[in-house]
Structures are given as C-alpha cells and as structure tokens.
Length: 163
Image (tube, helix red, strand yellow):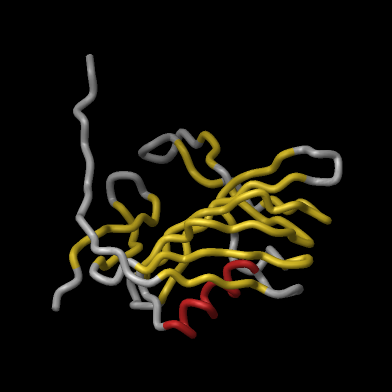
C-alpha cells in the first residue's frame, strides 16, 4: 500500500545574505549564533559552510523500539581532529522559549580521509583554522522548534510571520 504524500510549506521572500567567518577556537554553533545576533537574524538557512575543526561532536539516528518512529538519536560521538569540514547546512529559527537556535548537519573528513557526518551538537565543535559561511535570511518566515507529538523529535514548524 502506497503511503499518503504529506508536506508542510510556506512561501518566503528572500532577505539579506550574510557572509562570515568563525575564528579559531570558537564553537561552531556558538559562532553561528553570535553572527545571527550581530545582524538581528532570527530566521534563515545556512547555505554554505566549510573550513576545519579541532573536534567534531555529533549525533545520528539509531533504532529504538520504544519510540513511535522506532528511532532516536545516539549519545553524542566525538572525533578528534584535525578535521576538514567539507560542508554543512542548517536552519535557523526559534525554540519554544523564543531563543534563536541552529539545527545544523555537517560532514568532516579525518587525516585518514574517513568521513564522519551527522547532526552537530552545540558546544563540542571548536574551529581549527576557519569556518566560512553564508547565511540567507528568511525575514517573513517564522520557524519554531518544538517537540513534535507524531515523531517525538524537536522539529521546526514553519509559518508566515505576522506583520
């Protein structure tokens, strides 16, 4: 039996492009949040992100029969560097308390060219030499990251921003 095709979407008018760099020793997500604060950005997409990390801390999906989707995130995994940060992309929005949050995924390679990838954990990803990024503001979209009852995961809900 074919499953129903289900989606959720809204149209957005593009806003500013913010180009930046996160400096050595700074945590990746903390750096993105500081750039967002500096430019008053509350909703956006991280379209380009590359550089290097001292350490990569991430989670990924694993089986868990006790959950609705039979899936949960594993405990955080850390890979020591030096690491080439090949690419990253993400979503910027707000959590249920109104704080700006970043949902970021990335891919790194270690010195043996082994690839590691996943959902990046805040506080565990110090920059080695640089992270260069491009953030696209989505000014007329509100993104709220809250627990989704259907999936039991914290997910963004998208809506048009009220004027």
